[in-house]
Image (cartoon, rainbow, N blue to C red; front, side, top):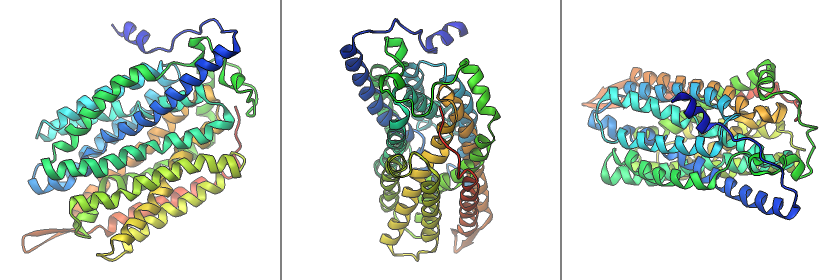
Length: 447
């Protein structure tokens, strides 16, 4: 059984190389567009099955289904499992058939959401959200592996930036559409609605994604695009190249920087809607629309980041990383300090944060390290970065939950939450992340 399962998900053998240039171009370009568009839409939809708990926090609190601490625990379980899964599945994705690996992951995540929306037991929430963390962890690394397989060095930054912005599409759909579903049909709709959508799209992914080019008789992408700007492909097996990744100090430094950036990212993802409702007294729908500025600007920031660094900085990511870090930190400060009743200021703050975090997800969560490590080990790179990132995100979730429960007061029977300690924690993590990223100022791309 296990052997058959491994064989099913393993990347196929190389086929005999095609010799007709016209046929090679026709197959390559058709598959490149199909795979690229599917990665954008598919990765975005992964997020709709991840953020349901963020949208439903206040309804769950108000109905007594879960406390803030319990929600922090459930969120942390998901993110810690996700962290381990990012590493394991990142390593596996270097050897996997991406079409099968990623499609099954989205389908199973969708089914888990349907089950989550059908129960009211805390233990069931914790177990199901843990399983969801594992299935969700298969979205990112396989996408990067596929981008490295089908796009060459000079074009990868631009494609990577656009793909990385796809999660903002998913976040936008969740913050706006899922919030509307919850507002009209209750908290369960925040899980059941995205689950139904993702079941359908996962079936489409089985047709539109692909394995690596050699399985179709196509040449290596660097040969197809005549792009050897990062030098010749390194010699050695995939396992040997993966070992090089573990030996690089820059991988570990940037992984810690990314972990701290993810503290800030998931703080806003998971708690900002509750902050807007409790501290600034928005309705859930209004809070969802204010949050909508975050993913929209996040997509623009992510899409612009790779193109900008390729176009204006010779594919170096140092100055753009610093600029994006300042915007992320500034956005959080503005959101925290802006007085109640100034919706446009809150929207600007969310937009600043979204634009900043969009670029940082491109640079710190993969592209800088993918640039400097062997591309055949891109999944391992993403796995190491991912486990650090989501340990940071998971730690943030339970710390934030306990800080919130520990700084609440009851006045005339109404619970009032103090968010100041949370923002000090989040903003401090963002500043330290910037400082660590600056130590990699002079790293340069390689094959």
